[in-house]
Length: 414
Image (cartoon, rainbow, N blue to C red; front, side):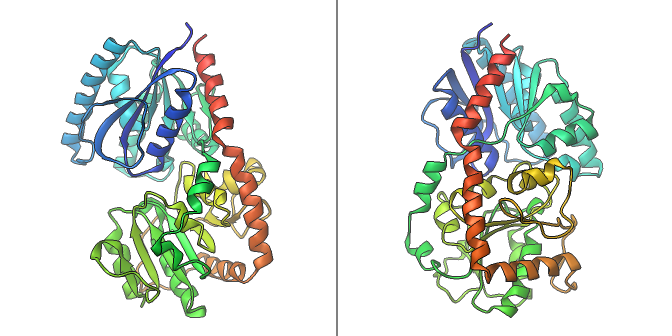
């Protein structure tokens, strides 16, 4: 059967990298197929889609376990009616919140896209429950292929969930490099005041996964050595108040986007919230820093490289290392020291536990401090990383990635 009609399902059009990637994929695939984007929850739109779209209006923001279970069943019922009516040839589901109702509802071939690698990090009862549900979903006969956005996720699914490796294919996330570059050139009143300053920047939800408390502690020590240094954090999340409290306990002057304060250079650390164009802020930074404890891929690394900004990142289980040091990771190595021989700087990953303002700096944190301090003073090294990083970003251009998706779609249509 030749595939002509495809549904791309996504939990929402807001918040994160999964949603952005799904929208980008749908935009590219509709050049070759009849594509409908199916959105579970439409509470906010950060990533608009101008093509064919169906909104199921199911509340997935309510995290109460009973409410979420009910809403996922409701999504399954609505999906079944939609599939019967539209007669899709293939469903591409992004994330578990899309895959679960798809598996429960449809008699249609599926490609299930796995974006996160938290399965390696969650070891408690909740983690075992999530792993069990995921194994059930991905082992379904309806799922013709599992697509992982990094080789690290693929390895985890094979090793920890015993998913057949032959059923899994890695396709990296697509990026519109030219569009990112154009958006990076924008200068608003706020981004302009940081241009030319020694600014560290990170982007990501304020959540345990991102480990931003480590970065704040590292920044506080760097600030003592270089009073001109600034840190900007783009993102929203449940740890916001805790991270602000930590910053103040470390003696930092804190700007919060939601307090109505006038922004100027009097602050040390800037919590900026969600930005529709993060690239204009990334592009004025001296260094992009990611302290994640686990990742699926690491979208903001590629985006920062596309903005011409050097990257320093933790070597968590999957994603970042594959981007900044692919040959290093192919040898099965993990960074226990500083590694910067390829496209960015790879650093040891931190432990999965919150550290307060009163705890002594660990050896890993001090290594990060020393490495960042030296890097900021080495313009030749920064320029090399800018050039090499931009070169690497082009490996993930949307044209390259969509050709891999087309090949996979043709493979499952046989």
